[in-house]
Image (cartoon, rainbow, N blue to C red; front, top):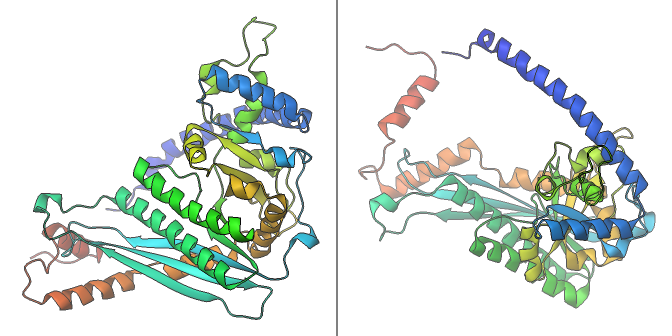
Length: 406
């Protein structure tokens, strides 16, 4: 049975009507927020005052942003362009990405596989990129009971994320030992990572390793690149401007603490900066305000960021976000060079090294089939687990096309 499209027509119409109505409401909110960013573009004092009031009224549970003090001369409503002098003649840009084979309890072998791809791109040098992969196979210990032989997809995803940042951290530090050029690591991932305490601790260790090397040579960095970001922390920062203002019609505060703690009101920062940033321009640098970033800050790794129009087309509006540890954001010259290097990579609105890292890391279906055949050969044809479950065999048969039942 295929999807019966005619049964979806009425639902599609409702969805379209709802989206159009929502767009009208968002346009009104967008106008209000745009007015605020233009009015307070250079008024850091008032922004910091209302942010502090908002933090106090929400018991420090605010989810917002604060302009970084080292960039106070950069207006919020104007983009910062790449300067020719900020683009290093030579540098090493390293991209990392990961792929995985998820565990399948219907398959003959219980395991998961992570493959991390790394590319080293030698900016300004007549040298071909270096590429390598790091495959990691995980399987149940032979001491476990059969009821425990399960890996969840979420656990595998977390394990892949950790391997990506560990491998990238190691790669940039090793490369930094071999060159005096700037070495920049790019991760296709936010740096403010959510997870269990131990997971966050392991994530922070990778950042701390890069920081230790940075303290030695001041020419190494690791950043996260997020395309189509959905965060609204700058929007929420601007909303705090109403925290102690009274509505003249009702006599009540324009913004109460409960409303203020809403992390998203429908407008994203990317939408806001679509009308601000020209291709290649970045925003000023912000620090993240959140309970999670407080945890990062306690380890000296609080996260800052800027938004970047990564488009190369004159009319392009591909707004991305670049995350970085605060110790890196404090170095204004280094941030300007990172801005220039990242944009030099965005020939197709996205960093070349991240596109190639994904290509290197991806595990294709034929790769999986070859790998499982390799396992089967090692285990032997008489091994009891060397067969798929009846459920999986049924899926193979039905999805391979119509067949006659006898």
